[in-house]
Length: 574
Image: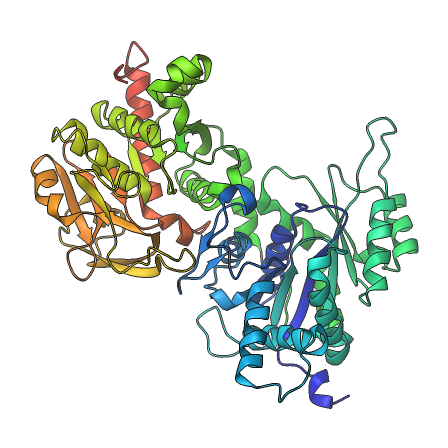
């Protein structure tokens, strides 16, 4: 084996999962990265998704949670959002590897004749492509520096034993062997359940999972055991004996008050020492410095006051559909010394038809909306629930309730104003009614109408403020422009801008052409903002997104007004 393979510039930490999906491999991978970064190491991340989709762009939020958008326009798995938020890095679409991308690359090479007439097979051609992709991406710095990262954390999606992940398992086995033990560390995340009747922590599922992993040629160096309560000592000893992992390398990741505690749990169990020893990084790493992170985690636990945020959406049955929005609300609320209390409202329950079809749900939805301190309408696609969103925006406008509309939410505010203030009763989006004479939201001319994947306006784009005294600009610190991430096919029709501005809806931000509307604000309203971009994707725990911070500050002021109101309500409009 070549000596250079033994001294790889970037070391690798692989995170696999067993027993069941949804154990929190993404949070574990992010937390391991945080601890290693706190030791002075530079960290990058790769997420492997074994599905055949090229990317997450065409997948329903109900299938796989939200689609996270990167600066370069990559539509990726939501775990990359966790990596960016925890590690404060800027990833690229190449950091999300899918089976679809790998096979697409292999087939393109075969068509070009790159394999010189050989029979193209899973081994070695697909596995070689996976290894090449991993090693190429791991060398790309994601923290603004020029040198490759010290450590690349790789998360393998799914669970060990899934048919679709087998080529990746084999490629990772080969990579582990070629790099050597001092360049490759494997952490296996597993479940230690407690049976309700017996009340005993059971190790057998983890034993079977590790046995299957070892049968595929990979042996875990550390076990990360998910459980409701901390593992007892005898359980760790049993796992060590049957899984061939030292007791000190068996990590206990039990349920915590908030996810910011997970890196602290790992630090307390000296995960950094085990990984640094395994990867021979003692010369590059120091002791972990997590004082700021500790203060952040503990300050959240100490918060007493909360703020009610009405989130009116289409996918409220699966909260992961709005994961970045939830995290952005968390960041902003904590910065304002408040705990976010998100009131999930299905937009369809607010509609007039629901009063007949589902009267209880309709009444509860309106009660929840009116009892909230602010209203947020996030992005989405399709016409389901649109009427309910328009009613929510109307309520916010008429009753001076703080309102933030994101992407679709901004378009909703334009439709609502057009219908109820301008009197354009047929005002609509081309997405919902292509034949309407008042097409206030239109299809973007450069976007494909025949292909869905990667055909939207995607990635980081510049928005220019042409009114520096506007509230949105002030929230950002009064810069001439801001760079935020986008994901949309439709935009405000510029033919209606003058009419809407005359009615009080001011378009204070636009793109470089001046024709694509990016930010709207309502005059004579304490906080009514719509943005075409998605500010939630760039929110960080210590750098909350300005529009979200503004919403929470306005909600806190609104709460004060409610407290001073003898009725406890402001307005009754539906």
